Length: 335
Picture 1 (cartoon, one colour):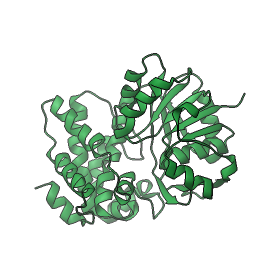
Picture 2 (spheres, one colour):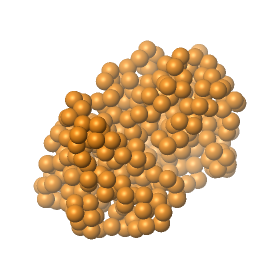
Picture 3 (cartoon, helix red, strand yellow):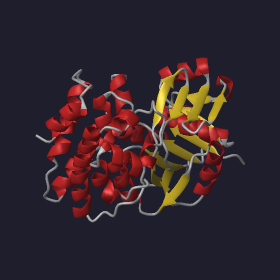
């Protein structure tokens, strides 16, 4: 019997992962907004990555739904909505039921799986994360511009998902301590707001020391809170997490030599937060920098740099600046 997977939240990540799974032979049902349904009905679905992988699905091969009740019986439900929508999605899933499907949260932040589990206590809910960026290019095109794996909390039957992802070359891993993995990923995602406020491609932004110094300051506060909470950090990049702030502070010529794998990405890759601001959507800054601030407070610490950057992102959501130079941004958040 074929692997039946539902993608709840057919946006950038959802469409890419769904396309990659269907490329590997899975039966995929997408659940999303009318806007995306119309776009894919007109153009089909096209996924690609910075290594050169390209795969297209015609509209006739897609099963797209806009209502929960129209979803068929599924083996897995992969939730890829923005963190701010998790509670609402959890309520809707609880009402219609999951039919025994395993639920996987592939979202930014650290608390989404807990929200889903709270709404559906009888369901098996697994934490997960995606360590690469996906850019929505319009006309049904979704491009993975950076390296990284899909990591999911260890559980039975997940090998089927890993097998389906092989065709697209998407690395798949399982891990028992997903709290550690999610916080380690959040350390990397702290660059999302910096990238959004720079209005530059990721590679260009990370190649400039002033922006990297901003990221190093954010990560130092996060690492202090993570250490106080006794959460081990995982190595998700070529550079150990605890060493990231030191490497990021290096002069450009040393950074580009010692941290070359960190710059192995498509020259046009952008962060999801940049895309949110570009499309006039609310960002996930409360589920990134906001989580650092909350964890720090829980353990008697402050996170003023994360607080200042969070305020700048909220200002950008309201039409404020999003073209800061590295020097300007560094001065504002470290004042």
